Length: 295
Ligand code: SF4
Image (cartoon, rainbow, N blue to C red; front, side, top):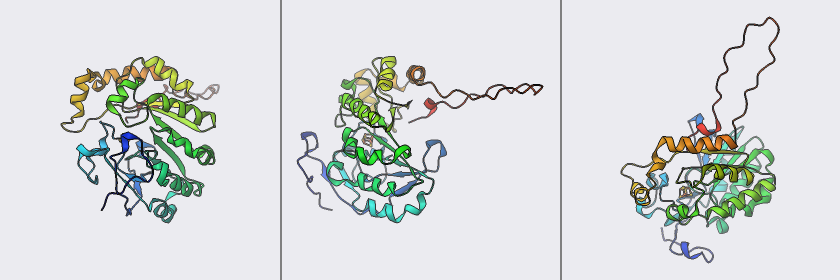
């Protein structure tokens, strides 16, 4: 397929991006593991221009190029909205996650609007819930559309560090951390449910202040997901070079989780008032916490 030019003037970081539009054969990827909290993943793009250095998708078998080119190419799935429309009967009472293998608001979305058009289809599926996961303030271009979902939609912002110099080393082409906080605040002010995903956990400067910042920015929930490396991952070298190997230590992840737990306590157990002469209640069972998930 002949690579095409970007449709409008890209910012300098994306000038060399290869755009290879395609007609996808499928658009809904079933998620068999209930622990993830959604039934289908939906990626309107293959590849991701953010090119995060740790991204596990870089080694997916359906990648168009090798892991060393990750972030240098993107395939917009031109027929994604039509495919989704044809598959909408599968979405009754389901949760759809956008997206597990790309950022739905990466720079190309400014022109291709595939995420937007998929959302327009999902809006017409009244029992379907939508979880958007992004690193980009570009999500704000769809603010009105997102609002029309009411409580059927939430937006999770991935903010893996409180330190933008860490982001510059690891997610160079993804939007700066302060711009993510600002976008989260605007979404929250517009009445959209937002959550903060500290995932994958990178080096954090001050976990307590970080957690408080998430709360102050309107996050209604937060979770901390540990970093997973690929086999012989070159990202290990980057962590070692910067002195960030602690992010692989489970104790470090627990410490950051604890700080977030203090600011975002898990829901309290609801206990019924004891009835006279009833047998003593069983010992309380610990509910799974918001932060027990692994990203
Ligand atoms: S934004 Fe997400 S999908 Fe894109 S490169 Fe980063 S981690 Fe991977």
